[in-house]
Structure formats: structure tokens, C-alpha cells
Length: 144
Image (tube, rainbow, N blue to C red; front, side, top):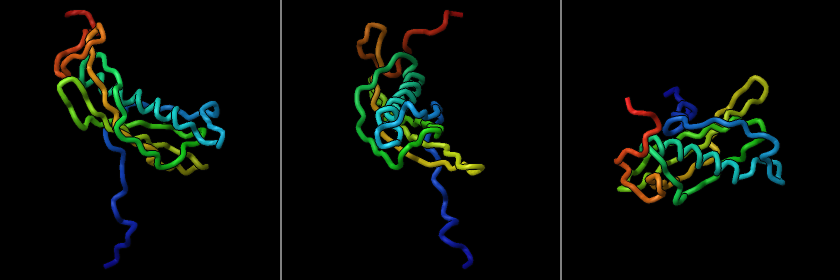
């Protein structure tokens, strides 16, 4: 057999691209890497956009049930957050969010998974009370 272990399938992002953002020097921590809180905020935004689409209206983050940082993010990396609905409850959605970076070194671009976590969102009415996920939220457009 001529195949080597390098022919194993390479991992790819899970879910749909929700946001892309450039990590800037202002986002660095005292160790010179991008602050984990900034990455977490971007992931929450990506999950919220996806939850809003699936709940068809307003949502709020109620929990982060799992979070794992794999690699540091550097200034200049393009952070790409991919979101995938993993569970729909009566009033909530769980979204698995993966953060990948496009890291350029000269002419070479690497795609690296840096972080992933599970975010739980609850669907809300206009007054902030919970509503069923399957009920349409307030319309963002006028009636036809």
C-alpha cells in the first residue's frame, strides 16, 4: 500500500459561516495574543445571528455550556465563526460555534480551528418574555 497517514481527511469548519472579523492589535492581551473575551464575544454574536434566523426573531444568550480554546489567535488573523444548530427546545436553541482563523504567513494561508463552544439562546417576545421557538417573532418588514 502506497498511502501515508497524510491522506487522512482534514477537518473542515462545521456549520455555516456567520461572521468574519479581523483581529486587531487593540484586541491583544498582556501575553501578546488576542484576548479570549474578544473571541468569545465574536462567537456569541455568530451564535446569536444564527439563533435569530432560526427563531425568526429576538433571542438572548442564556448559557455557554461548553467552551474550549485550541490555539491562540494573533493580531492580523481573520477570525471566521461558523454556527450549527444542534438542539431546538420549546423556547431555546443550542448553537455549536467554531472559530477558525485564516492566518497569512507570506504567500501561505493556513486555516486553523482555534476555539469552539456550545451557546444556548432563548427566543423572546418584544416585551422580553420567553416565546416558543417555532412561533414567528416580531416582523422586521412591513406586510405585503
